[in-house]
Length: 300
Image 1: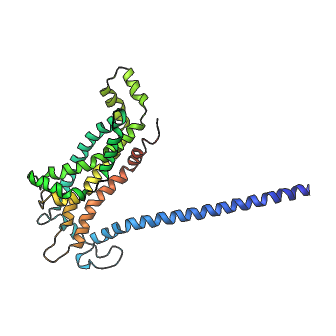
Image 2: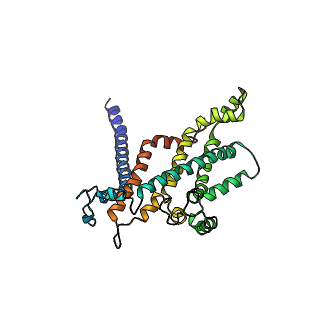
């Protein structure tokens, strides 16, 4: 009995030590992971926090380095929407209109193109997909001058088409590539079952495939709209200084407060107005965005 007891103690002691060591390593790993996450969050949100602080700060204290809300004033927001010089309110409407049109056209074309690329077999399909992916990586600054000359020759500078058409060309690769990947992972059996029940190809797509693709479509539409809302380079050149068609990103860059005056606090207030709606949209629909991004990851 004594030998057995000693034996069990001898065997159990190392096991306990190993378990303690594993728990200690696990705890240290958790602490390290949380520290990295907190560092990334602070690094990403610190500029936005400082923008909000300056947006609510009185202009006379613009260069006050106090890192919290002091000398709070709402005058910056009133100035931001003063249509006399900046037309910031009009620029928000322009951004909403341009983003909505770009998203609508890109999704209409992208849905059918992505479905065709996923379901149809034809020669050169891989080459077309590679070209689409390459187009999404093509730098916009490389074609900025040709686009400016093209729309100048057509007399379309400073118009909505000049701001919408180039953005569609950059949004389509994102939409087509994302939806092609999703449609490729969708099981064929669903469509075949609808066809067996007498549905035409169009009816099978409209009644079966399209509802199942809703999460991916919703996610792609949000990504396209956000990309259009944040676009600056092409819009700054193709708007040609016409304030009636300038989107909010260009209006922010051209903010003025009189000669030899840089309107830091007013610009920050306008930046908050532009940024907060996007943050709210992402927070409200984050689950659908994640579900859409992962919807095609597992075959049903």
